Image (cartoon, rainbow, N blue to C red; front, side, top):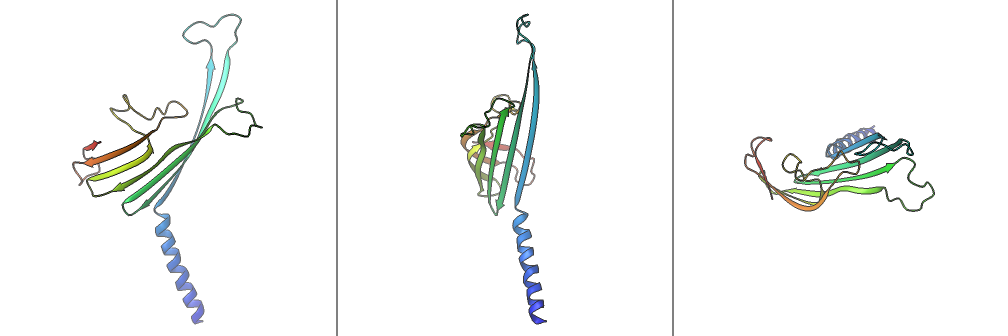
Length: 160
């Protein structure tokens, strides 16, 4: 009987530790499909050419892990146009690494983020994710973030 109580106590403590670890792991999945009808570009279509229909898709899987002051994120994606890729090809050139970065929070006001990441400046008019394109855009960069107001999450930030 004592062995069962010890085993049950051990299982409860291990499961509570596992819950603490699972709470710091997030996963996201983005599926995007787009169909386009090409009936001439910037000009009327000629009589010899017929309209073309293309369907493209993107699958993006992201994993975000938090541990104390460290955050690690990785996102891989597969972008393809249907019927364009060979099924017998040995190389998959559609699969790319979209994001892979680590962010360390030195204090409530200052943090550094290093790796391949999405940068967004001036409401994404100057530099942005370009997410309307299926492949998106990311940059290899070191970004410093300084929060002027650490009391609220909506405070002003300065990016270096």
